[in-house]
Image (spheres, rainbow, N blue to C red):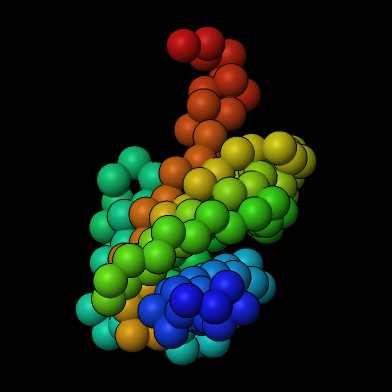
Length: 145
């Protein structure tokens, strides 16, 4: 096989991989505004979200409401997206740090996060969220675990 000829299967995986990463990053940008209606354009109707602490949600408006209680405001400094292509789905890990203010106005930054997404048919069908917020809240209260 000529080395300069692209393998159609490899090209398809590369296209799906790029598309999935773009979908996730656009979703996250909309979520951080927060603009749950725009974010909803990137999700499947049966989206399953597992947020920090095992909280279950099905729509970006629910996670925005949770964040409004936990933070005065919060944003993501996205450092990278790692993409795992698969057959019929693509897994996207988005990593970075959170910055913002706690409800009392105390600023924070450098709060690590990992978000894992499953993208199928151009839509996000699953989202799992982990971050260090709970540990930071404990530290603010003088609890070292």
